Length: 358
Image: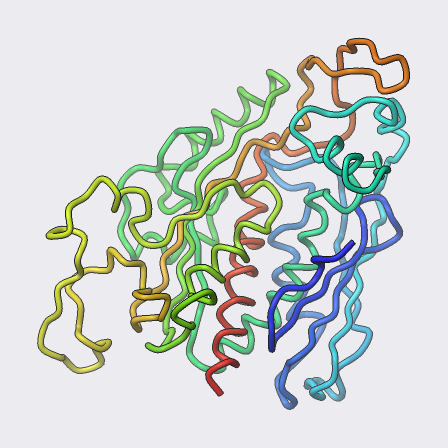
């Protein structure tokens, strides 16, 4: 299996399966002398850790990270950074009945088609649990970005088709401390009630998340195949359950007019970005190159396909129809735990682009 590494100069490689002994990763391309600790990685891992809230799975994993290499006396050495996250609460027996049947909406069929085999215990490598290693690697990228005045933030815009009420940029700044990464307090209780209802029905919900990268200088990205928006889209789309990415106004731009969609330039002001644009419909990228405005991305996350409702499939041994009800412990809404994953993806992509300019 190839495709386990993202980045050109700052590279993150992940390994491990949902029900194996551990997951982990290797970060290559990190400069020496940057503060590094297990606590730095753990802070981000705790945000995606399973087993929390109405929307979370009942699988309890501490996701305790262990640094294996690349650090000395609290700082990076410039050598590859290795880390590992143990799996401690697997219940692989829940998945025994799935050995001979494909779960609708999962990668069971496609893994069999490509590899001639699959790990049916929670999906193996295709499980969303793989993202724990991405979040740990992303924590290193975030620390490197922060040293250059660049930050990543997110908020949830919708859960299950229910949009958040109107909110301000000041509201969004506090999203990380709210349930569901809600952009305002008024969104929390309606979303909580919706998730409770759907969980009781044995079903699941998706949602939409906004990701912003602040403090990015103008000039990042290459103008043809390695456009900054193309690289960001690849990073975000590679996160499990992500089914769509918009940059700036995205699909709304296709329904707009040029006279509205163009970001008009104004005379420079103290601290303004080049051209001092009046708006940011472009999402901080023009011609594949950053403008100096915030990078703005909107990410669509599907409902996870592991549902307690009956579904139709085929028994691979008898080749007869089979009614399937997925057992195990699953999130009725993965969106809150997906937020740190898409933030990590954006952080790795932006820091890799930043290294390309030096």
